[in-house]
Length: 163
Image (cartoon, rainbow, N blue to C red; front, side, top):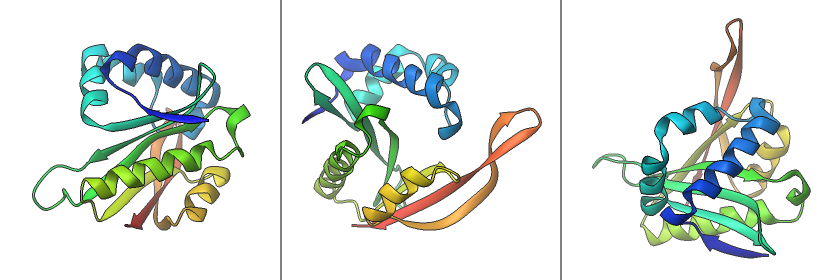
């Protein structure tokens, strides 16, 4: 398995993987393919140029992805947000997600960040275990954080790690 940093030229392939992720496991993520489409390809290219986004590659396939963005503002720019973490079902348990997290933490340290934050659906026990093994600590559960449909909402777990 290799790991590569994605750039603006990877935006269409990255969005295709995210769409497949949302289509297959919509309830595991706060976002939706419709949200990604509304942002637009140009904005995604800018985000891939600005943020640190990595893919674990096996052969020609991206089997896991994840990103890091630095929070903006004089009082918040010591923190980073880990976002978009996803491993294909066949890649789970292979260490691909850990490779992404290691790379994101290296990038965060290179940026001088002091802590990382992330969110996940509160009932996603498998992902939570991966993050806990990597040193992330649960600090809150936000009830009804993500709308599932007009009548149902899902709780979101908030985790952090000091670097």
